Length: 543
Ligand code: GLN
Image (spheres, rainbow, N blue to C red):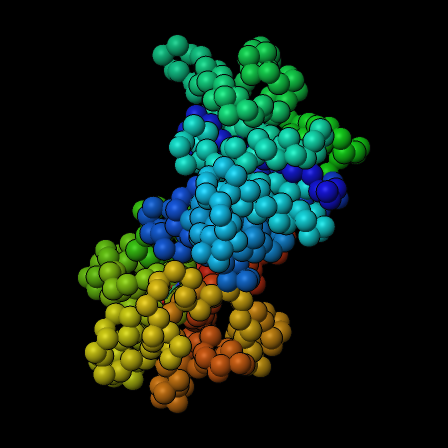
């Protein structure tokens, strides 16, 4: 048995209470006290990973350095902790069953009936302990997706029950996150749903050690006492989690409530002194006191759901704070952009970002947005599909290749300026088969992108199937679209810029996955600066 201690975070009453943020906030506090901490998420759905899920259903698919397509909560973990996660940090029921079934086919359980208990639960237990057993962490926080009482959560809950027993006294803590609803007609906060949820957990043999209560109103000491009594926890272990303007306030709120000290106490770990949140609070200070504001258009087709572009929105928060600028992100549905309305929609913007995406729908609107940014010298950042759209727009409108397109949108195009990679041609399986994860990129000296990063060699994360077609490189460069970043191993183009534009960058990779509170991404930081400069120039010319 290693010395690693385990914290389990379960959820009750309803989904979307923010288990991921509570887990990340606790991890932040523990990390700021010097404990080596990591977070992992176990998701109860049958997809092997969320890569095949529609962003409308599940929000953004987050990608790690090692190329895992994961739940967006891993993005929060990285943004809070500034430590990279990996495939091991996100496991789904699909992946658990896949490995149990593969073992069964290999004959590893020969002679046995393979069952949920013990085979599935053993697989879950060994995955939960995988990171702990590396010896790299003092504390591993495991978030169990879904809501207690769901049929699909049962094997996880049973595994946690067994692990709590296996690990023994003071080696694990169960945190249960619930909702304390406010009935406005009665003017009262209600504890009954929480009591029931704790009871459901108890029926599965798990005693919650700490209750984190999500609420819109302050929870009085009386209510805390009542919750403690009926839910069998110490009063100090009833933690209020009140609604707040930004998720980045949650670590401080949890500190005030003592979530870290209660946890450490239950784990029998020292809790002297206070967590060092100096850098975190500097960021909050800047974020709360912007000196000016810029409006940046986010052109995409999943704009109705905020979670679809989670990492991009968070990157703007980090970059805004770094510049002491409030970044107002204006979501623009690419399907609503037509040449006629573009003037009204985008002319008020200080910069335009064309988002990543898949498939035909809304593509023309994205191309029109690129064209507008290019022709009006508006700072432009194209990410992944957004970069591909920039290449298509330039090929059509500057090179005069009228039917230039991506092979993804038009298989028959006579000018596939964005094409499928040779290795991707024979792929029939959609799950986990794109160009994924960290790839090296060599930047051209003296290019804009080189200035942005301040170095020649970078590594960024990818998630795409189609690529810049190098057969068009000479033509594009002659006419002013320069390739300024390429993968040294494959020669694939990673970055394009425009010679005659103050700030126009398309990147095939996803910078947004690597922006954190501690390390705002330089590309976003610089893009926000370009928006500030553009706004200033616009105002000067109007004066
Ligand atoms: N659909 C494009 C591709 O597969 C872009 C993907 C993306 O924007 N993440 O290459």
